[in-house]
Length: 269
Ligand code: DGL
Image (cartoon, rainbow, N blue to C red; front, side, top):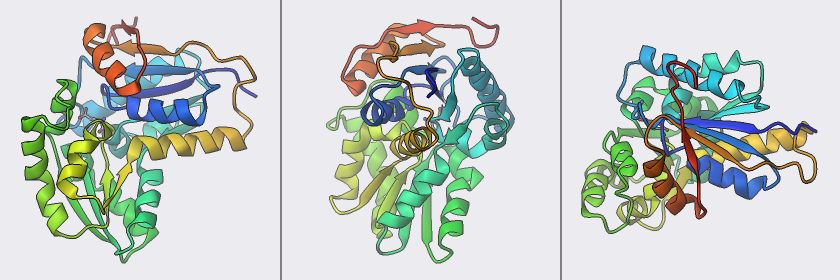
């Protein structure tokens, strides 16, 4: 038994897709969430910068005495996995569990991957998928406009700007006939309905935040690291920009209110 909280982080709101799944899978657990809303997006930055940010984010969570760290960010998972693996607590990220779920779901062995420019350039998903099954055909597409659209709150399935961007990015993948599409950035499930409209009803959409959360839940349960009964503490949310903006989209997405606290990640709290 371990009563410490689970630490989850992302460049912004995207990691909430993992929090939502953790809340469902492990309702008795405490969560400390860090969203780097002041420095989002990570996905268009250099590898060195993303790694520096990732190190700071992980250290922030360690400072909150977490029992495990979940990098609920495709970009960090694709560029800073070695930094996570060196942490003194178990570290999870999105790539491996998501690739496993997609390989299983794609009956026709054709998998699409969408993510930030950094995630797609890293080739992380292509490698993970090919390791699982060298015969998989993988079609990748960077969607750099999706993160700013989500962070700006353009998440309604009828929003014409988001819809137009989705059509531009996703049409080639639909035409390639992929059987499963990896939402390789944790922001993307927030616009899942728009993605579904463009991809059609038959393609499996694989949510990377969800798959990572399920892998972490399974690890904690099988290693007897869950909280004891009635030990759950109120979730804590930390951000690096206006907490009000974060709270309004977060509430819309999580379905309950969230009080974000602003911190200064560069200079300590
Ligand atoms: N949610 C992050 C990811 O999964 C978004 C990255 C970004 O900030 O560009 O990649």
